[in-house]
Length: 227
Image (cartoon, rainbow, N blue to C red; front, side, top):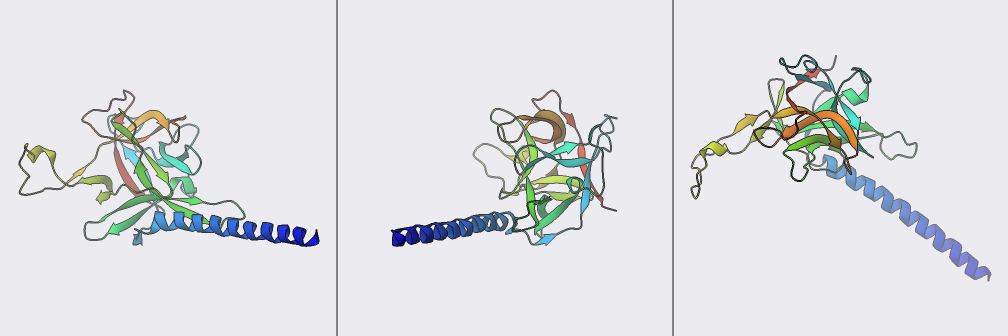
């Protein structure tokens, strides 16, 4: 009986240690996946929008808003959430992974408040949430997610396109591929996050000529150096 109890105790201890190691490895894998393409991180900055035609949007700041467990959208400041320059939600970074073309990912640093967290924070790259039958893709931040690369035209955030579709003809590959910087940002009211249950006014990218969400307003997204 004693040998059986001892065996059970040892088995429990072994599986507890194994579980802890597997959890640590999983977290390490997330961090590696989220950062392995990153070569260089910029100084911190703020993001804001410019929309001369929409006074209620012009020069508003953007912040990382909660839209699920470890998921953040890119929301517009409002009466309930005002810009605070030193709060983490309003601070972003540019992680450059292609020096020659100046391409990289806008990232947000999520602080891990748990006392047993292995790392104090986790850098989360910006990507887009593509929704079936919709041509408006909200921006969001999520760990271990493939980033959507952007670049800066001065202080303006733009997305480079590999080929200008205007020069493509059926059956003929363009001899000279062109690259242009696109800015198709808009601010929309939409459901964000896993399950699309969080109703937010946030930054999105338009995949067509006109957004199919009537609440969208076209804007320019710019960075502002953190003071």
